[in-house]
Length: 389
Image 1 (cartoon, one colour):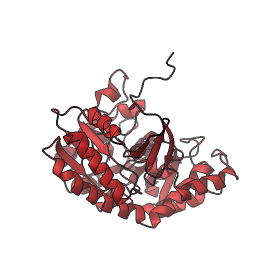
Image 2 (cartoon, helix red, strand yellow):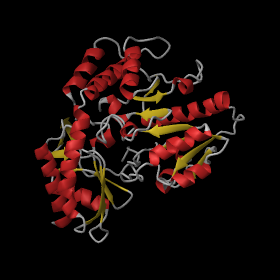
Image 3 (cartoon, one colour):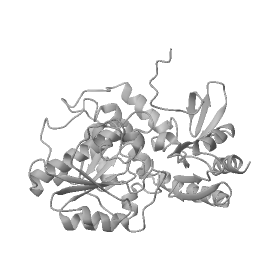
Image 4 (cartoon, rainbow, N blue to C red):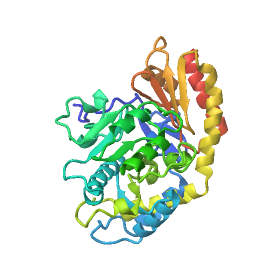
């Protein structure tokens, strides 16, 4: 009997070990990882600095709950807010929890600071979004796979087209407490909005006295060639959702960072998590911050991303209809005449590369930022073989 729920349709490979950018399957075959667990493994599998931090903390204390302080959480908060240029941090575990936290913060801020009537606060979201799979989050998804069959849905959200600043401005009114968006939409296929869109969103929200919440769970912590994609674009949101790479690929660690005025609206007992801010996760998070402080992961994303783009560009018109990329993050649209995105991922697997399709015709490439120039060439060669034969 198959005892595992069918909420995923994985590629037909079973992983037994991982090192750096490489997987080893149960049959002994090695594969280049070009998904990096949706950017959770930005720094490579079992990065020695991150593993060392985890091992050291395992010998001390792993969980206290937030009923008591631990000696890792305060320093983690100080170091993460300093890295991101923010004022306050609230720790959680998963990315979806970070987004749920930001939603609660925006609603509480709207009532307690902005003065919106109780239960009237609205959050403006955008088409093509992906912020997680909780019932509240799928309430403002327009992806049938995420939404269909899971109603009734949570009210309090309006949706406008992604990248359309005019539509965004028209949706913001006196009852708007926040705008929530991704600076680059990862799950949608690495969709990059028009230049200046994020800055326009910042201007619109500031003029209306509303918050700008930016979900950097996939785009943040090095993936786009910067610590934060919003900072790369010169924008300071009120709240930033972080996750995935914050746990170094070792355990789930997430956080909301931002303005003390907004994060400070919460009172003891109004929000929390047994595991959020646990000392093991905080110790790993501190090691992640130390890696990012060197600037090496961000630089590698820029350099290896430019190298991979140059190698893939000749495929446009030869099985690939479009390429979108920022840093070391790619969305490649596959010509339907060649097959689906999954078909190409199966061919890539045959060539020793593991990647993931999304929305039918798009293949995402997001290897760990530790990938070498020679390994980039291997990825490009495998993709060429997968689409041109």
